[in-house]
Image (cartoon, rainbow, N blue to C red):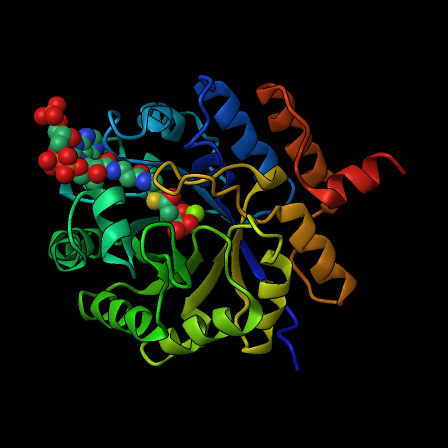
Length: 302
Ligand code: HMG
Ligand code: MG
């Protein structure tokens, strides 16, 4: 008995675009968010309040948040790795605040150092006041956990390390977590082990799967997560993206492909696949490439 309904967070505007080398105008990012919400997405990860020296593509974070026509049905989230990020995210008028912030840590020490320039323990110390301040303002808090299956620097990651990070996240008041396969090396049983380790600390309703598709395993891993009752997933429109600190890692699984699979299994998403495909074509054309979604390609060439 699989979940009958799945909630998708489209992370394309953030994870999808953060690593893009060519400048992407804020207006294009805003239009992508609009198209995603018009296609029925009710959770969108919009941008990151991180150092513009580290991730130049997200330097227009405030401009993008300002430009979005907010739909009250949609949860808009942003990454905030430290107090500076949170302060920047709430410097705008309240109606432009994110509904949810994301602190992001890693199950691997080496990746934590490369991505956020500190150890896992230090990252938790930095996140704790961010989580407390956000919750005090009524902003929901999600924790992203990178490298829960494999790490580009350390190789295989033991589920116990994932459990340890989940426990630390829970301890500082993070409300829900993403189990991320950052470099897409996971296979179904390994991904299930990472999810099980997380489930020791979070309710299944508060766990989401975040699978990059580097090795073409993301849909299988999504199905494996569904088998455990996980019903929240992150994916990118047109399969955009990759992480700047995970060389060679490709984008998230394409939202179009996930939606096609789910609808084919009779699982509801509330998303209009045709409108979603159009959104993916829009952003891909703006970037001068084809969508990397197989479903998008198949349906458009039918
Ligand atoms: P640091 O250098 O250790 O930080 O970076 P610092 O506090 O020493 O500050 C250094 C400089 O950065 C200072 O500026 C700060 O003001 C500035 P300077 O004095 O040199 O001019 N700074 C900031 N500026 C703007 N916003 C901020 C901010 N913080 C400091 N929030 C830091 C630490 C975390 C900031 C840095 O390492 C960073 O920005 N890293 C970026 C990490 C990132 O965005 N990675 C990609 C997202 S995570 C991901 O993709 C994985 C995920 O998808 C899940 C998965 O797939 O695994 C979520
Ligand atoms: Mg990611």
